[in-house]
Image (cartoon, rainbow, N blue to C red; front, side, top):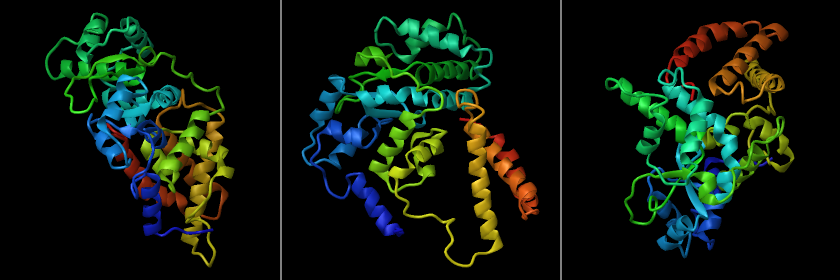
Length: 345
């Protein structure tokens, strides 16, 4: 097994990111290779592609946007990304639970009493005519059912909560041109993603399968690898990817594994390795009982696995003092972290 040092790892990542030498790819192919480009700031994709492609001209990307070959939409980590039309449609359903939970993590209180399925249906009905609408116009259309009138800042936060839940989370929408065109300043106007691209969003895969998760692993490693599963999750914000990684394990090469010991080890190192194994086994066991459509809070998923890891080591191994480590360190830290508004995204 080859072990990559930091310099080799950095060079490999730069090469896969097309940043060691400009590539001769068309802009659309480069966007697909990169798994999309961060596009919160509308002009940043132009800089990103110019840095990577030999013959890139801003008009190339503007043409792809107006030609509906690429699209601006909320996806990874609930941020605006520039994606190919195919990727936006194929990947959207896999991200839906994460998008919803990230909004609830910030605005759970403001959305108390709001039937999210009803809000989604209302939003889709309003947008069904294909007319571009600003967020204010969308909110005006749903405020009769969910009033936001009241004193600031309470009314303002509820209005923002409805807006962020409606479009980024519940209704797949595109931010259409002139937003995102070269040297063009324009506000955000939304239309249904399916209406803009001319075909429906790919539905969720049957329970027990995750073809999109597996595709994301392959695409991420092609553009950012070598990388860890934690890196992958930080990129897209999705839970449940360890199963996707396990499903394509035979396609992957391991360059580094800190828990495979080849010389004498201490009891502490053995305990740490046992803890990692028990933690991951808890995920696998619990994953057979529930689905992420129901148990979709990442914090609760990880907390459960951590708790069961300590419990398993205490009851089934010779590391009887493991529970003391949990009580002394992890428990108090967990109580504190659980209260943060960003803990349940």
